[in-house]
Length: 354
Image (cartoon, rainbow, N blue to C red; front, top):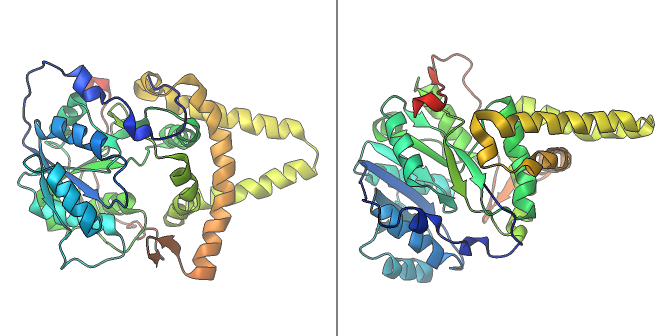
């Protein structure tokens, strides 16, 4: 169960993989783990190194490091003999540095099964094993992230996760792919913002199979509060690639204004209760109450109000500035449109599939 913790350097949380598996016999899996990295400070280096030490005993780890030269050198020293540490391929071009790192890492991987994960994702042994088994039957696996620890801003963002789970599937900070499929489709577009959606759509467009088990929980460390605040409009910009979501978000403020103008507080209360009930459905799905505390469903109306506001700001950035700010550039496209005609086999497994 996740627990609340004060805001701060949440990356210093106790590395539970060391505690839970101490003394257990390590079984290596025939998998590669690609972690694209671009840091400007090393505040989380010690905690990440602890995780990499645990991870490297179980899978082959490739760190594709786009950090500045001084940090790259420090990382090389810290991870020497632990992981394969390499820079992004200089022949790769594109606006999204994470995608360039993923493309470099997957091509360099020595296994057919490849996990792709952000630097804040923390697998445990059970999740790695489940992904390994699912990749025997699918081209792409989409796990479910949850935040632990759970400071206020992670609690707030969990409202989004629960609504996504209630209405379909969430977009995690980690995916797993078959290397042969990735290479056959030529990777994916490095000039879009919502890179995980782009990878999912690219696999689908090439008639790949997808597994999105709602029960496959993978822990994620929350960002600090300042980073969270800085991502609000950028994450809302992702919805430009999903018209139904965008239109729903854009309708929130006008609907709120209409309800206030008509002096119908019961309408507002009823809408809020309905959103909480929908989020609670997502929380309970596939045993989610094990990782999502009961209070997280209450965050859903707050998150929806935030998204309704930030979607208008994202739309303004698209038309006034030509795109959203990303590092030292602007990215215009959130993702390429989904194909209208495709033959896709979606795998959906319940608890019994484990």
